[in-house]
Length: 231
Image (cartoon, rainbow, N blue to C red; front, side):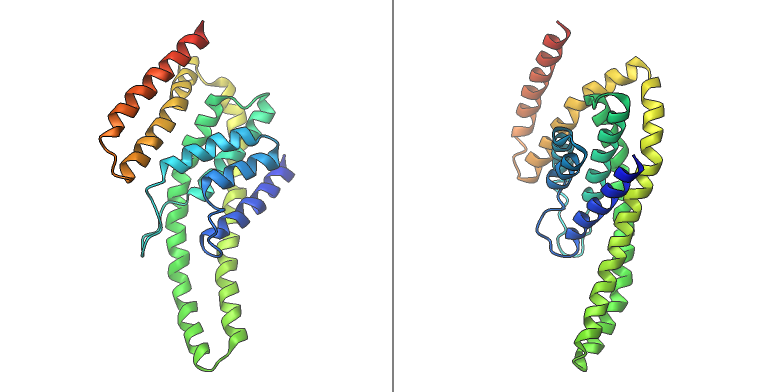
């Protein structure tokens, strides 16, 4: 498992660099989580987790000086947590995926705060690069760009490794001992989280009148699915 954790740390960390480097949208949760799922042999779980987190933070875009929560770290961590823990426990259940998402969300906010610190520290490199530009010192400018990129890479890879090495064994130990009532709540949350995400998406495109209608339809559909599942 440790080798898989290292692999996911590097793969997820490199994909997260898209947030600050190429910006080709491959760091979005809907991309990064399924990629982690493919690497670990469960793209379905990765797709579900990625879709939930994509909707959850779809209205938090990096516009101007605003730094959004790091949904890339949250998606990579949640996908790895659910799949690797599920592989040890026998299966990746919807309750396990829900719990993994809930655990990962706060670390997206923590990673945002560190993103801000990294960006602030890069201001000095930017000032130095401007001085190098005055003397047309291209190699020095390139070194400062690579240094800024390296700081982000070390942070993303290190954070993913640390989160996985701590929380995957913890979840493997805790999850089987959870009360049945708590697992039933996680089962309901599995349907509630996409509902919340779609409500956020509808709100972000100014379709507020459609939110209550969608919620009603979704709740009826979820209740029907649970009813037939019980039968």
